[in-house]
Image (tube, rainbow, N blue to C red; front, side, top):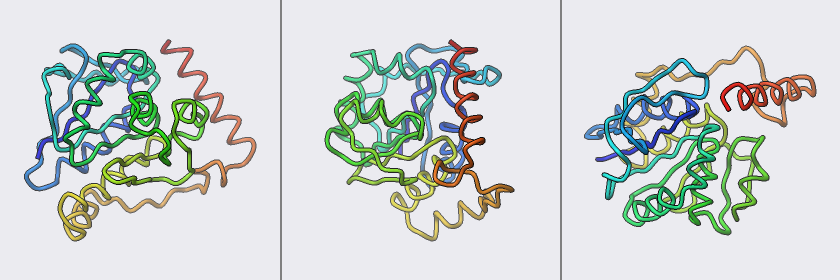
Length: 214
Protein backbone atom coordinates (compact mmCIF):
# COMPACT_ATOMS: atom_id res chain seq x y z
CA UNK A 1 0.00 0.00 0.00
CA UNK A 2 1.69 3.17 -1.24
CA UNK A 3 0.97 6.39 0.69
CA UNK A 4 2.51 9.59 -0.69
CA UNK A 5 2.86 12.87 1.20
CA UNK A 6 4.25 15.85 -0.77
CA UNK A 7 6.38 18.23 1.27
CA UNK A 8 7.34 21.77 0.31
CA UNK A 9 9.28 24.62 1.86
CA UNK A 10 7.37 26.06 4.86
CA UNK A 11 5.03 23.08 5.30
CA UNK A 12 3.12 22.83 8.58
CA UNK A 13 4.96 20.05 10.47
CA UNK A 14 2.10 18.33 12.31
CA UNK A 15 0.00 18.32 9.13
CA UNK A 16 2.45 15.79 7.70
CA UNK A 17 4.09 14.14 10.71
CA UNK A 18 0.83 13.45 12.60
CA UNK A 19 -0.74 11.41 9.77
CA UNK A 20 2.64 9.84 8.99
CA UNK A 21 2.85 8.48 12.55
CA UNK A 22 -0.60 6.93 12.22
CA UNK A 23 -0.46 5.64 8.65
CA UNK A 24 3.02 4.16 8.97
CA UNK A 25 1.49 1.61 11.36
CA UNK A 26 -1.09 0.42 8.82
CA UNK A 27 -0.15 -3.18 7.96
CA UNK A 28 1.51 -3.37 4.56
CA UNK A 29 1.72 0.40 4.15
CA UNK A 30 4.75 2.32 2.93
CA UNK A 31 4.68 6.07 3.49
CA UNK A 32 6.82 8.18 1.18
CA UNK A 33 7.63 11.87 1.26
CA UNK A 34 8.13 13.60 -2.09
CA UNK A 35 9.03 17.17 -2.99
CA UNK A 36 9.40 19.47 -6.01
CA UNK A 37 13.16 18.78 -5.89
CA UNK A 38 15.21 16.35 -3.79
CA UNK A 39 16.98 17.87 -0.80
CA UNK A 40 16.24 19.49 2.52
CA UNK A 41 12.71 20.73 3.04
CA UNK A 42 12.17 22.95 6.09
CA UNK A 43 8.91 23.38 7.94
CA UNK A 44 7.17 26.72 8.53
CA UNK A 45 8.49 26.90 12.10
CA UNK A 46 12.01 26.76 10.75
CA UNK A 47 13.71 24.06 12.82
CA UNK A 48 12.62 20.76 11.28
CA UNK A 49 14.58 20.03 8.09
CA UNK A 50 13.49 16.86 6.31
CA UNK A 51 15.67 15.13 3.73
CA UNK A 52 13.41 14.20 0.81
CA UNK A 53 14.93 12.03 -1.88
CA UNK A 54 12.10 11.68 -4.39
CA UNK A 55 10.67 14.22 -6.81
CA UNK A 56 6.88 14.23 -6.88
CA UNK A 57 7.10 13.95 -10.67
CA UNK A 58 8.65 10.49 -10.25
CA UNK A 59 5.39 9.22 -8.74
CA UNK A 60 2.86 8.15 -11.34
CA UNK A 61 0.31 6.59 -8.99
CA UNK A 62 -0.30 5.71 -5.35
CA UNK A 63 -3.01 4.29 -3.15
CA UNK A 64 -3.29 7.37 -0.93
CA UNK A 65 -2.28 10.95 -1.67
CA UNK A 66 -2.11 13.22 1.38
CA UNK A 67 -1.55 16.96 0.92
CA UNK A 68 -0.48 18.83 4.08
CA UNK A 69 -0.91 22.55 4.62
CA UNK A 70 1.44 25.38 5.43
CA UNK A 71 2.28 28.84 4.21
CA UNK A 72 4.43 27.44 1.42
CA UNK A 73 1.58 25.71 -0.34
CA UNK A 74 0.66 28.98 -2.02
CA UNK A 75 3.53 28.22 -4.39
CA UNK A 76 2.00 24.83 -5.16
CA UNK A 77 -1.39 26.43 -5.83
CA UNK A 78 0.31 28.70 -8.36
CA UNK A 79 2.22 25.84 -10.01
CA UNK A 80 0.25 24.36 -12.93
CA UNK A 81 2.64 21.41 -13.23
CA UNK A 82 2.08 20.39 -9.62
CA UNK A 83 -1.69 20.78 -9.91
CA UNK A 84 -1.68 18.69 -13.06
CA UNK A 85 0.29 16.01 -11.18
CA UNK A 86 -2.29 16.05 -8.37
CA UNK A 87 -5.08 15.52 -10.90
CA UNK A 88 -3.24 12.66 -12.62
CA UNK A 89 -2.42 10.86 -9.38
CA UNK A 90 -5.91 11.41 -7.98
CA UNK A 91 -7.40 9.66 -11.00
CA UNK A 92 -6.29 6.27 -9.65
CA UNK A 93 -5.97 6.72 -5.86
CA UNK A 94 -8.07 4.82 -3.38
CA UNK A 95 -8.20 8.03 -1.33
CA UNK A 96 -7.03 11.59 -1.90
CA UNK A 97 -6.77 13.53 1.34
CA UNK A 98 -5.67 16.81 2.84
CA UNK A 99 -4.87 18.42 6.17
CA UNK A 100 -5.43 22.09 7.01
CA UNK A 101 -4.78 24.33 4.00
CA UNK A 102 -3.84 21.31 1.91
CA UNK A 103 -7.49 21.35 0.86
CA UNK A 104 -6.77 24.58 -1.02
CA UNK A 105 -4.38 22.62 -3.22
CA UNK A 106 -7.05 20.03 -3.95
CA UNK A 107 -9.54 22.79 -4.67
CA UNK A 108 -7.11 24.65 -6.93
CA UNK A 109 -6.66 21.40 -8.86
CA UNK A 110 -10.42 21.32 -9.40
CA UNK A 111 -11.05 18.29 -7.21
CA UNK A 112 -13.40 20.04 -4.78
CA UNK A 113 -15.64 21.93 -7.19
CA UNK A 114 -19.06 22.09 -5.54
CA UNK A 115 -18.03 19.64 -2.81
CA UNK A 116 -18.25 20.20 0.93
CA UNK A 117 -14.77 20.39 2.46
CA UNK A 118 -12.93 21.77 5.44
CA UNK A 119 -9.71 23.65 6.15
CA UNK A 120 -8.10 25.80 8.82
CA UNK A 121 -10.65 28.26 10.22
CA UNK A 122 -8.55 31.25 9.14
CA UNK A 123 -8.53 30.21 5.48
CA UNK A 124 -12.21 29.64 4.74
CA UNK A 125 -12.48 32.40 2.14
CA UNK A 126 -9.47 31.04 0.25
CA UNK A 127 -10.98 27.56 0.11
CA UNK A 128 -14.35 28.81 -1.07
CA UNK A 129 -12.60 31.04 -3.60
CA UNK A 130 -11.42 27.85 -5.30
CA UNK A 131 -14.95 26.46 -5.62
CA UNK A 132 -15.39 24.32 -2.50
CA UNK A 133 -18.19 24.65 0.05
CA UNK A 134 -16.75 25.09 3.55
CA UNK A 135 -18.01 23.28 6.62
CA UNK A 136 -16.61 23.59 10.14
CA UNK A 137 -16.56 19.81 10.60
CA UNK A 138 -13.23 18.37 11.69
CA UNK A 139 -13.06 15.63 9.05
CA UNK A 140 -15.16 15.56 5.88
CA UNK A 141 -15.42 12.60 3.52
CA UNK A 142 -16.79 13.02 0.02
CA UNK A 143 -16.43 9.63 -1.63
CA UNK A 144 -12.73 8.96 -1.87
CA UNK A 145 -11.76 12.54 -1.05
CA UNK A 146 -11.21 13.31 2.63
CA UNK A 147 -10.36 16.77 3.95
CA UNK A 148 -9.53 17.68 7.53
CA UNK A 149 -9.44 20.98 9.36
CA UNK A 150 -6.46 22.68 11.00
CA UNK A 151 -3.16 20.99 11.91
CA UNK A 152 -4.04 18.50 14.68
CA UNK A 153 -7.15 17.27 12.85
CA UNK A 154 -4.88 15.34 10.50
CA UNK A 155 -4.45 12.71 13.22
CA UNK A 156 -8.22 12.21 13.40
CA UNK A 157 -8.39 12.01 9.62
CA UNK A 158 -5.53 9.50 9.49
CA UNK A 159 -7.26 7.22 12.00
CA UNK A 160 -10.47 7.31 9.95
CA UNK A 161 -8.42 6.59 6.85
CA UNK A 162 -6.64 3.71 8.60
CA UNK A 163 -10.04 2.16 9.33
CA UNK A 164 -11.11 2.55 5.71
CA UNK A 165 -7.89 0.96 4.48
CA UNK A 166 -8.05 -1.93 6.96
CA UNK A 167 -10.78 -2.24 9.61
CA UNK A 168 -11.99 -0.53 12.76
CA UNK A 169 -10.07 -2.83 15.09
CA UNK A 170 -6.76 -2.11 13.36
CA UNK A 171 -7.40 1.64 13.53
CA UNK A 172 -8.31 1.33 17.20
CA UNK A 173 -5.11 -0.63 17.82
CA UNK A 174 -3.06 2.13 16.16
CA UNK A 175 -4.85 4.70 18.29
CA UNK A 176 -4.02 2.69 21.39
CA UNK A 177 -0.39 2.08 20.38
CA UNK A 178 0.14 5.81 19.80
CA UNK A 179 -1.88 6.50 22.97
CA UNK A 180 -3.93 9.09 21.17
CA UNK A 181 -6.29 9.96 24.00
CA UNK A 182 -6.62 13.77 23.92
CA UNK A 183 -7.24 15.45 27.25
CA UNK A 184 -6.40 19.12 26.55
CA UNK A 185 -6.02 21.49 29.49
CA UNK A 186 -8.27 24.04 27.76
CA UNK A 187 -11.47 23.83 25.74
CA UNK A 188 -10.33 26.32 23.14
CA UNK A 189 -9.70 24.17 20.08
CA UNK A 190 -12.25 25.71 17.73
CA UNK A 191 -13.56 29.14 16.84
CA UNK A 192 -16.92 28.19 18.35
CA UNK A 193 -15.32 27.49 21.73
CA UNK A 194 -12.48 30.01 21.95
CA UNK A 195 -12.73 33.31 23.78
CA UNK A 196 -12.45 36.55 21.81
CA UNK A 197 -9.03 37.16 23.36
CA UNK A 198 -7.77 33.70 22.36
CA UNK A 199 -9.10 34.14 18.84
CA UNK A 200 -7.33 37.47 18.40
CA UNK A 201 -4.09 36.07 19.81
CA UNK A 202 -4.31 33.10 17.44
CA UNK A 203 -4.68 35.45 14.49
CA UNK A 204 -1.59 37.30 15.67
CA UNK A 205 0.36 34.04 15.81
CA UNK A 206 -0.63 33.25 12.25
CA UNK A 207 0.41 36.68 10.99
CA UNK A 208 3.73 36.35 12.76
CA UNK A 209 4.53 33.07 11.03
CA UNK A 210 3.65 34.51 7.64
CA UNK A 211 5.90 37.52 8.30
CA UNK A 212 8.85 35.65 9.79
CA UNK A 213 8.92 32.84 7.24
CA UNK A 214 8.01 34.87 4.19
